[in-house]
Length: 272
Image (cartoon, rainbow, N blue to C red; front, side, top):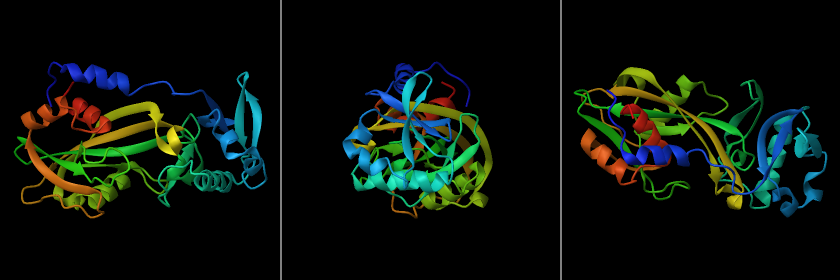
Protein backbone atom coordinates (compact mmCIF):
# COMPACT_ATOMS: atom_id res chain seq x y z
CA UNK A 1 0.00 0.00 0.00
CA UNK A 2 1.06 3.63 -0.41
CA UNK A 3 3.44 4.89 2.25
CA UNK A 4 2.03 7.10 4.99
CA UNK A 5 3.49 8.66 8.10
CA UNK A 6 4.37 5.88 10.52
CA UNK A 7 2.45 5.82 13.82
CA UNK A 8 4.46 6.28 17.01
CA UNK A 9 4.37 2.59 17.94
CA UNK A 10 6.28 1.48 14.83
CA UNK A 11 9.71 2.82 15.83
CA UNK A 12 9.40 1.30 19.29
CA UNK A 13 8.35 -2.06 17.84
CA UNK A 14 11.31 -2.07 15.48
CA UNK A 15 13.67 -1.23 18.34
CA UNK A 16 12.30 -4.14 20.38
CA UNK A 17 12.90 -6.51 17.45
CA UNK A 18 16.66 -6.29 17.95
CA UNK A 19 17.82 -6.76 21.54
CA UNK A 20 21.01 -8.13 23.03
CA UNK A 21 20.83 -11.45 24.91
CA UNK A 22 19.61 -11.23 28.48
CA UNK A 23 22.67 -13.20 29.66
CA UNK A 24 26.11 -13.85 28.13
CA UNK A 25 26.12 -16.43 25.36
CA UNK A 26 28.85 -18.60 23.86
CA UNK A 27 29.19 -19.23 20.15
CA UNK A 28 28.02 -22.62 18.90
CA UNK A 29 30.18 -24.04 16.13
CA UNK A 30 29.57 -26.84 13.69
CA UNK A 31 32.72 -28.12 12.03
CA UNK A 32 34.45 -24.84 12.88
CA UNK A 33 31.69 -22.60 11.45
CA UNK A 34 29.45 -20.54 13.69
CA UNK A 35 25.80 -21.55 13.45
CA UNK A 36 24.30 -20.25 16.69
CA UNK A 37 24.89 -19.45 20.34
CA UNK A 38 24.03 -20.84 23.75
CA UNK A 39 23.50 -19.39 27.19
CA UNK A 40 26.90 -19.40 28.88
CA UNK A 41 25.66 -21.49 31.82
CA UNK A 42 23.03 -23.80 30.34
CA UNK A 43 25.31 -26.74 29.62
CA UNK A 44 26.88 -26.48 33.08
CA UNK A 45 23.37 -26.59 34.56
CA UNK A 46 22.56 -29.73 32.59
CA UNK A 47 25.82 -31.38 33.57
CA UNK A 48 28.91 -31.56 31.43
CA UNK A 49 29.23 -35.31 31.79
CA UNK A 50 25.96 -35.75 29.89
CA UNK A 51 27.24 -33.58 27.05
CA UNK A 52 30.97 -34.18 26.65
CA UNK A 53 30.56 -37.60 25.12
CA UNK A 54 30.61 -39.24 21.72
CA UNK A 55 26.84 -39.15 21.35
CA UNK A 56 26.69 -35.35 21.30
CA UNK A 57 30.31 -34.87 20.16
CA UNK A 58 30.43 -31.58 22.07
CA UNK A 59 33.64 -29.88 23.15
CA UNK A 60 34.95 -26.49 24.28
CA UNK A 61 37.25 -24.64 21.85
CA UNK A 62 38.53 -21.12 21.35
CA UNK A 63 36.73 -19.00 18.77
CA UNK A 64 37.61 -15.37 18.03
CA UNK A 65 39.46 -15.12 21.34
CA UNK A 66 36.69 -16.54 23.53
CA UNK A 67 35.51 -20.00 24.62
CA UNK A 68 32.93 -21.60 22.35
CA UNK A 69 31.01 -24.86 22.18
CA UNK A 70 31.80 -26.97 19.14
CA UNK A 71 30.10 -29.96 17.54
CA UNK A 72 32.00 -32.17 15.12
CA UNK A 73 30.97 -31.86 11.48
CA UNK A 74 30.88 -35.64 11.00
CA UNK A 75 27.23 -36.71 11.04
CA UNK A 76 26.32 -33.21 12.18
CA UNK A 77 22.57 -33.80 11.99
CA UNK A 78 22.81 -36.78 14.35
CA UNK A 79 25.00 -34.81 16.76
CA UNK A 80 22.64 -31.81 16.79
CA UNK A 81 19.59 -33.98 17.34
CA UNK A 82 21.34 -35.89 20.13
CA UNK A 83 22.04 -32.52 21.73
CA UNK A 84 18.39 -31.54 21.26
CA UNK A 85 17.26 -34.74 23.00
CA UNK A 86 19.62 -34.04 25.90
CA UNK A 87 18.19 -30.53 26.24
CA UNK A 88 14.68 -31.95 26.16
CA UNK A 89 15.44 -34.53 28.84
CA UNK A 90 16.77 -31.76 31.06
CA UNK A 91 13.71 -29.55 30.52
CA UNK A 92 15.79 -27.02 28.59
CA UNK A 93 14.11 -27.29 25.19
CA UNK A 94 11.27 -25.50 23.48
CA UNK A 95 8.05 -27.30 22.46
CA UNK A 96 8.98 -30.53 20.67
CA UNK A 97 7.48 -30.65 17.16
CA UNK A 98 9.13 -33.65 15.45
CA UNK A 99 10.01 -31.21 12.67
CA UNK A 100 13.49 -30.60 11.32
CA UNK A 101 14.80 -27.10 10.55
CA UNK A 102 17.81 -26.31 8.40
CA UNK A 103 21.04 -25.34 10.20
CA UNK A 104 23.04 -23.00 7.99
CA UNK A 105 26.40 -21.27 7.89
CA UNK A 106 26.55 -17.48 7.90
CA UNK A 107 26.56 -17.46 4.09
CA UNK A 108 23.38 -19.56 3.93
CA UNK A 109 24.92 -22.95 3.12
CA UNK A 110 22.97 -25.78 4.71
CA UNK A 111 25.18 -27.79 7.04
CA UNK A 112 22.70 -30.00 8.87
CA UNK A 113 19.17 -30.15 10.29
CA UNK A 114 17.84 -30.15 13.86
CA UNK A 115 14.58 -30.56 15.80
CA UNK A 116 12.62 -27.31 15.72
CA UNK A 117 12.15 -27.28 19.50
CA UNK A 118 15.88 -26.79 20.05
CA UNK A 119 16.40 -23.95 17.56
CA UNK A 120 15.84 -21.04 19.96
CA UNK A 121 17.86 -22.55 22.80
CA UNK A 122 20.76 -23.09 20.39
CA UNK A 123 20.40 -19.57 18.98
CA UNK A 124 20.06 -20.91 15.43
CA UNK A 125 18.91 -18.66 12.61
CA UNK A 126 15.46 -19.68 11.37
CA UNK A 127 13.17 -18.62 8.55
CA UNK A 128 9.43 -18.03 8.61
CA UNK A 129 6.72 -16.97 6.18
CA UNK A 130 3.71 -14.70 6.68
CA UNK A 131 0.83 -13.94 4.34
CA UNK A 132 -1.13 -10.69 4.26
CA UNK A 133 -4.46 -11.52 2.65
CA UNK A 134 -6.76 -8.74 1.49
CA UNK A 135 -10.31 -8.91 0.12
CA UNK A 136 -11.01 -8.70 -3.59
CA UNK A 137 -12.06 -5.03 -3.35
CA UNK A 138 -8.93 -4.17 -1.32
CA UNK A 139 -10.98 -2.53 1.43
CA UNK A 140 -10.39 -5.11 4.12
CA UNK A 141 -7.96 -7.76 5.34
CA UNK A 142 -8.31 -11.27 6.74
CA UNK A 143 -6.57 -11.73 10.11
CA UNK A 144 -6.48 -14.58 12.58
CA UNK A 145 -6.71 -14.80 16.35
CA UNK A 146 -4.21 -17.32 17.64
CA UNK A 147 -5.50 -20.18 19.77
CA UNK A 148 -5.09 -19.69 23.51
CA UNK A 149 -3.24 -23.03 23.59
CA UNK A 150 -0.37 -21.66 21.49
CA UNK A 151 2.99 -21.66 23.26
CA UNK A 152 3.86 -18.18 22.02
CA UNK A 153 1.60 -15.13 21.93
CA UNK A 154 -1.62 -17.06 22.75
CA UNK A 155 -4.83 -15.21 21.93
CA UNK A 156 -3.11 -12.40 20.04
CA UNK A 157 -3.97 -11.30 16.52
CA UNK A 158 -1.84 -12.36 13.57
CA UNK A 159 -1.68 -12.13 9.80
CA UNK A 160 -3.79 -14.49 7.71
CA UNK A 161 -0.96 -17.03 7.97
CA UNK A 162 2.39 -17.22 9.71
CA UNK A 163 4.60 -20.28 10.03
CA UNK A 164 8.10 -21.72 10.08
CA UNK A 165 10.04 -22.83 7.02
CA UNK A 166 11.00 -26.46 7.65
CA UNK A 167 14.09 -28.22 6.32
CA UNK A 168 11.85 -29.91 3.74
CA UNK A 169 10.45 -26.59 2.46
CA UNK A 170 11.31 -23.95 -0.06
CA UNK A 171 9.77 -20.55 0.65
CA UNK A 172 7.09 -21.28 -1.93
CA UNK A 173 6.15 -24.69 -0.54
CA UNK A 174 6.15 -23.27 3.00
CA UNK A 175 3.66 -20.58 1.94
CA UNK A 176 1.40 -23.16 0.29
CA UNK A 177 1.59 -25.64 3.18
CA UNK A 178 1.09 -23.11 5.97
CA UNK A 179 -1.71 -21.33 4.12
CA UNK A 180 -3.60 -24.62 3.92
CA UNK A 181 -2.83 -25.76 7.47
CA UNK A 182 -3.66 -22.45 9.14
CA UNK A 183 -6.25 -20.93 6.81
CA UNK A 184 -7.63 -23.86 4.80
CA UNK A 185 -6.94 -22.01 1.55
CA UNK A 186 -5.34 -23.45 -1.55
CA UNK A 187 -3.14 -21.34 -3.81
CA UNK A 188 -5.90 -21.34 -6.47
CA UNK A 189 -8.08 -19.40 -4.01
CA UNK A 190 -5.56 -16.56 -3.95
CA UNK A 191 -4.65 -14.11 -6.68
CA UNK A 192 -1.71 -11.77 -7.11
CA UNK A 193 0.52 -13.66 -4.68
CA UNK A 194 3.86 -11.85 -4.50
CA UNK A 195 6.75 -11.27 -2.08
CA UNK A 196 6.41 -8.20 0.10
CA UNK A 197 9.78 -8.10 1.82
CA UNK A 198 11.60 -9.31 4.89
CA UNK A 199 11.38 -8.55 8.60
CA UNK A 200 14.19 -9.61 10.93
CA UNK A 201 14.22 -10.39 14.64
CA UNK A 202 17.09 -10.98 17.07
CA UNK A 203 15.99 -10.98 20.70
CA UNK A 204 15.82 -13.08 23.87
CA UNK A 205 13.36 -15.98 23.97
CA UNK A 206 11.82 -17.62 27.03
CA UNK A 207 12.30 -21.12 25.59
CA UNK A 208 14.50 -23.49 27.55
CA UNK A 209 13.64 -21.75 30.80
CA UNK A 210 14.66 -18.35 29.46
CA UNK A 211 17.85 -19.61 27.80
CA UNK A 212 16.72 -19.02 24.22
CA UNK A 213 17.63 -16.43 21.65
CA UNK A 214 15.47 -15.86 18.56
CA UNK A 215 17.26 -15.06 15.31
CA UNK A 216 14.70 -15.11 12.51
CA UNK A 217 14.10 -13.76 9.03
CA UNK A 218 10.42 -13.49 8.13
CA UNK A 219 9.64 -13.52 4.41
CA UNK A 220 6.24 -11.92 4.01
CA UNK A 221 3.92 -12.20 1.05
CA UNK A 222 0.73 -10.48 0.05
CA UNK A 223 -2.21 -11.73 -1.99
CA UNK A 224 -5.91 -11.26 -2.60
CA UNK A 225 -8.31 -13.84 -1.20
CA UNK A 226 -10.68 -14.48 -4.09
CA UNK A 227 -14.34 -13.56 -3.72
CA UNK A 228 -16.32 -16.42 -2.21
CA UNK A 229 -13.32 -17.92 -0.39
CA UNK A 230 -12.99 -17.67 3.38
CA UNK A 231 -10.29 -19.02 5.70
CA UNK A 232 -11.02 -22.11 7.77
CA UNK A 233 -8.34 -23.38 10.18
CA UNK A 234 -7.17 -26.98 9.72
CA UNK A 235 -4.58 -27.55 12.46
CA UNK A 236 -6.33 -26.32 15.61
CA UNK A 237 -3.89 -23.45 16.14
CA UNK A 238 -6.27 -20.61 15.23
CA UNK A 239 -9.25 -19.55 17.33
CA UNK A 240 -10.99 -17.63 14.56
CA UNK A 241 -10.58 -15.40 11.51
CA UNK A 242 -11.96 -11.88 11.13
CA UNK A 243 -12.26 -9.76 8.00
CA UNK A 244 -11.40 -6.23 9.13
CA UNK A 245 -11.38 -2.87 7.41
CA UNK A 246 -7.88 -1.40 7.27
CA UNK A 247 -8.82 1.28 9.79
CA UNK A 248 -9.73 -1.40 12.34
CA UNK A 249 -6.52 -3.34 11.64
CA UNK A 250 -4.51 -0.18 12.23
CA UNK A 251 -6.42 0.60 15.44
CA UNK A 252 -5.65 -2.88 16.82
CA UNK A 253 -2.01 -2.49 15.82
CA UNK A 254 -1.86 0.74 17.84
CA UNK A 255 -3.42 -1.10 20.82
CA UNK A 256 -0.69 -3.79 20.73
CA UNK A 257 -3.19 -6.53 19.91
CA UNK A 258 -1.02 -8.15 17.21
CA UNK A 259 2.01 -10.36 17.74
CA UNK A 260 5.37 -8.55 17.43
CA UNK A 261 6.07 -10.41 14.18
CA UNK A 262 2.70 -9.61 12.62
CA UNK A 263 2.90 -5.99 13.76
CA UNK A 264 6.14 -5.41 11.87
CA UNK A 265 4.94 -7.33 8.81
CA UNK A 266 1.80 -5.18 8.71
CA UNK A 267 3.81 -2.00 9.30
CA UNK A 268 5.83 -2.88 6.19
CA UNK A 269 2.62 -3.67 4.26
CA UNK A 270 1.21 -0.25 5.12
CA UNK A 271 4.41 1.43 3.98
CA UNK A 272 5.50 2.49 7.44
